Amino acid sequence: MFGKKNVKFSSSYFSELERRGEEWSFESYMPIVIVGKNEIYKVIIDFGDDVPIREKAYKWCDLYAKINYCPERTGEYQKVVSIPPSFGVKIWSFSAMFVTCICNLIRLKFQPQTSLTNHFRLYFTQLKALPIEDFEVKDNHGKKNNYVFFVSSLWPHQNCVEGTNLFRKVFVENCKKKGIKFEGGFLLLNNDHPQIEEFGDLIFHKRYPIQEYISKTKKSALVFNTPAVHNCHGWKLGQFLAMGKAIVSTPLQNNLPENLMHGENIHYVKDENEITETVERILQDNSYRAKLENGASKYYENFASPVSVISNIIAHLGICNLAK
Image 1 (tube, one colour):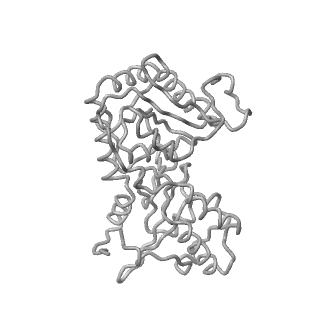
Image 2 (cartoon, rainbow, N blue to C red):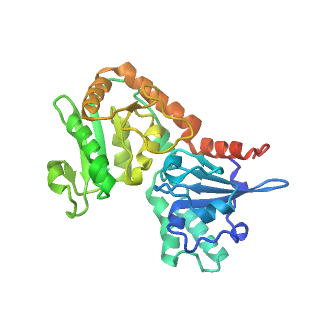
Image 3 (cartoon, rainbow, N blue to C red):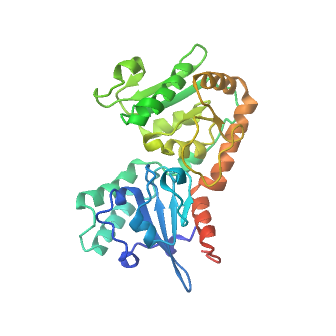
């Protein structure tokens, strides 16, 4: 967006932002400044799953861009704008990551505000991810296909036990019917879960490698989305939009910069019967599936791609003339 040479790491602009004592601040938001000719614009990008606004960060910034914003639960905040769900991507090679990690540690005088272990962990984690181009490649729109791939964690959170897990179970059970080549189920890494018996043979215990997960999701005729922990926009929704998938979803709980429209770029379902009918329709109606896939791709390009998100933030700030 700005050109690589114009993006820098520094602690000098953030001395007024006290992050200690603010719960999950390092796991929930990233502060940035945009330095113009005559003014500095302070921006918070809040990617946390929960809906509360981080008050210290809100007071510090000129604009608070938040993924999971729900005015009905938090109240109205004048500086908050909604941004779409995100997902992790690889941005550095090992050598570039290591150099950046060490240089930033030196800038912090070897005293990161999180622990030293956490400082390294946050950099090394991105090496496990895939570059964004691997998600954005789209093909097979509307072509006949009876393969469905879906995997999900079996979450122990109360809203997931009562809703998220059950919706996903109905979807999986529908896809395991005769005529559909289904692969997937629910990942459970330990046996301490209240629904382990209810989910029975739908459970597996070994993670899919990320490359395999993305490759098989791309091949899937349709995908299923539902609000997850804290009723958040999960990262799956961001990935599904990037991949241009036919998305079946229960109603979303939080705001988006522009609503996803039923029958255009998503198909909403409310109960078990609608899930059953929709799975059958999308698998049989290639033109409708292609419409949803193309709609999802357009939404991603206009609102959810990294460049479009930053462009919309700049537009809300009213900044002009920020060419590379």
